[in-house]
Amino acid sequence: MKNRLIVTSALLAVLVSPVALHAQSATPAPSKIGVINIQAAITNTAEGKKVIADLQNRYLPKQKELQRLQQEIQADQDQLTKQAATLSDEEQGRLSREVEEKQKQLKRDAEDAQNDFNNDRDDAIKRIGQKMVKVINDYAAQNGFTLVLDDAQIPVYYASKDIELTAEIVKLYDAANPVADAAAPAKPAPHPAAPPAPKPK
Image (spheres, rainbow, N blue to C red):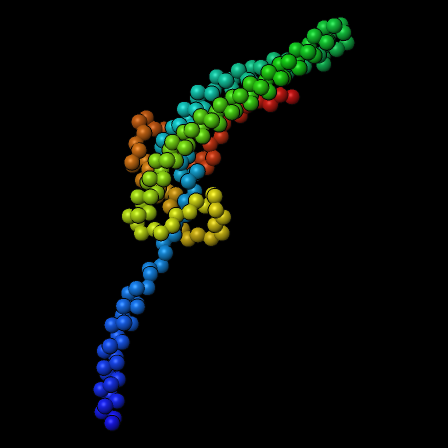
């Protein structure tokens, strides 16, 4: 009887062990997740830096024109203040109207320049972003990532440095999209900014 129990137990062990092994092998591997700040990645690529520098240079004449208009307004206001006692009412009224018109023009021109800059910048970022998504997809597939999150869009309260992909993606993007006459590496610029336009007083 005892021998029969031993044999039965041994048979059960032989039959059950393949099932157990199969169950273990069927257990899914842990998910591999990465995080990236795609805005910072785009603006820190060689192409992104060049695009922003080119945009700022293109809008520099407009910025100087706005500054010139601001100086004219300031000069007229100074004249009104300093010569208030000697200017006739008619002359004071004329200067006041000129200042008001110039202030309106400055406001319109500054808003138009800002909108034009933003549109050109957004178009460039979108163009680079489309190419970067392909780089991210290829990298994630080749390195076994099941999910890559943009930590600028979704709150990430903790992430190991091992899963931060921004710098790696920038390197891969630059390798895949070389830029002729790329400027020397500058300090990271997380958010591209328009040239500051003077505000009317």
